[in-house]
Length: 128
Image 1 (cartoon, rainbow, N blue to C red):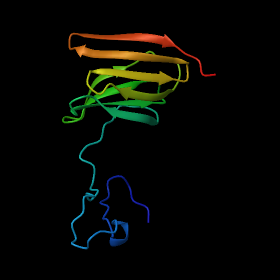
Image 2: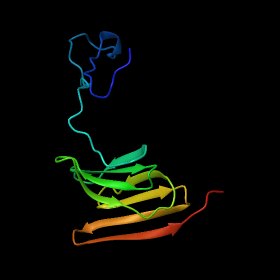
Image 3: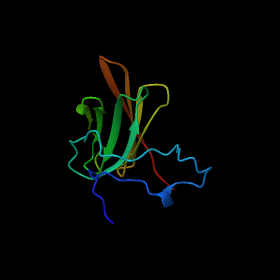
C-alpha cells in the first residue's frame, strides 16, 4: 500500500517489537506532517536541526541551503554561493554553525552565532 506524505499511517501489530504484551510501546504513531517547509526548486538531499530545535537547515540540488524557523514554517535565510548541486549539510551540536558541501568541490561554513552577522567561509576540497 502506498501512502502519501499527508496520509495518516497506523502501526500494525506486526510492526511492533516483541515485548511483554502489555500494549505499551515506545514507538509513536506516525501522523500527518505538522508543516511543510517550502522554497527549494530542486530535490532536498539533506536536512539537519540547529541547536535548540527551533530551526532546521536543508540542502538541495537547486544549489542552495535554506534555514527555516520550524515553528512558523518561515524561510529565515537562503544560503547561496555554491556553483553546483549541494550534497550534504550538517550542524554543530552546540553552536549555531552549519556546513554545506557541493559537487563544485567546495564546502562552506556558515556562522549564525551573532544574529547581526552571518558570515561564511569557503573551503576548497577534492576527494581522492
